[in-house]
Length: 264
Image (cartoon, rainbow, N blue to C red):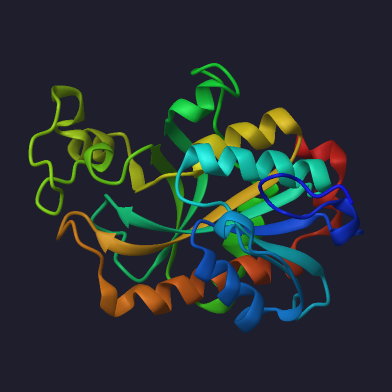
């Protein structure tokens, strides 16, 4: 057996599967597999990095996997997924919006990221673009439109911390921010950034360097112009919509766009 150290499974366990849905939350990865796919097998629960094999409604076999929280864990998981044969990754996450027109309960499809993440510095230089695959971005957008989901596409601020790095002071143990983290939301609003999250910037750089196809759709569970806290009343629905969009995109993407020539 050639199981990888962190994810707990090897290429022989996913023979013929080249696409993964990647969630930070292990419970969300489980819900993807059990509620939105036809579950075929549980691959691993090693280190809490739950992974499953399932089949989309369109008949495509995929892995539903857990990245863990943040860029360092994501970098490990994506590296090992690539080692075992995954060539396309669709991230399904949660996010807080910055722009007032992006409301809680909607979804954001990231076409690129403002990447302020230490893990990404080990992958490529700071100035290296952190961009999603245009083909997966289009497929996610088409899926959201077809499903009637409230969607937005644009730029994401991908940062390393949930509290200080996203300018949270009211809900944080630490009410005092260092000068470089004060006024972030207003500055990013002016740059037309839509939202904060914690994985996509490093994921996008990894994908470009590794030659993978990658897309990202996140459920908006906090509207930061209203409050720092999570909008629990819409969280379950928004997450469900983001998962539905990802699964539909996998079924609907033009097979020609999955060609290796289009991952670079």
